[in-house]
Length: 138
Image (cartoon, rainbow, N blue to C red; front, top):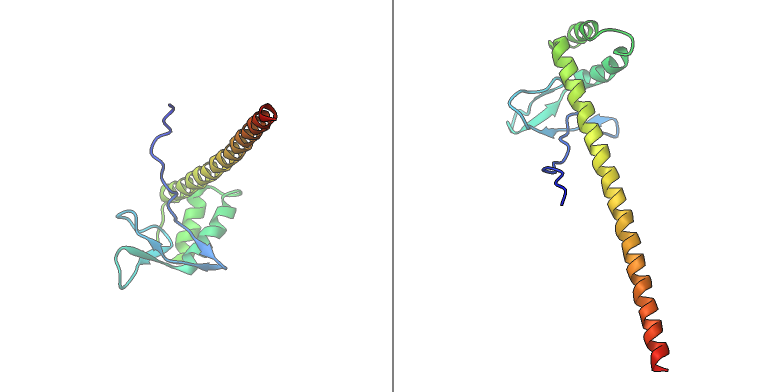
């Protein structure tokens, strides 16, 4: 049997529903760029919409400018410092999580198709046996 390791749900970093950022659970000790500790619950991170919107815009700028230039722009326009290394780590982690989630969804789809095919083959085999038994009885 092939072991695929421990299955882990992708952890949310930036969840946006209906163009509105939502709160996320706190997973690490550090508070990611674009979030702050919830005033009532330290295990929840409250979004800072302006910072998250600017971060989305910064992703587009990275196609044209360096991480250092984009991180400086982001720090200047949001008032919260982020280094070029921090920006790169955040975006790499986000990309990795998205790829893992996509792969898991694809594997689940393949498994669902394989199960449906196996059930159809099993049903076909059972039906043919029933026909043989009824023909033998007649």
